[in-house]
Length: 87
Image 1 (cartoon, rainbow, N blue to C red):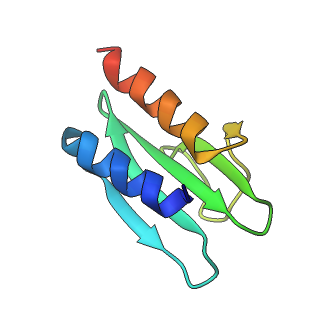
Image 2 (image 1 turned 180 degrees about the vertical axis):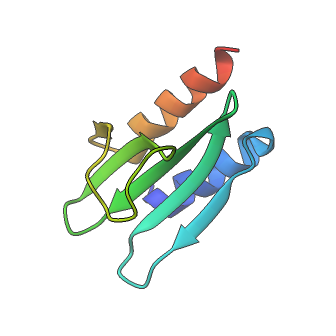
């Protein structure tokens, strides 16, 4: 399953996270979500075949890397599910 499909699935499963999906022509994708009043960005960068999750608060306007990286979209999805369950 590709990143966009997984990001869409997260958005459907967790509407309370106020998800906002952004797709880019390059195939990159970002999913902005809120977990316990903290804003996060889940990212997929096809040029690196990399997935990441970072807090957006305090981030610089230019890409500086991710706080946590994952080898697959499914691993990133599992992390988001885990974080949503901890309330």
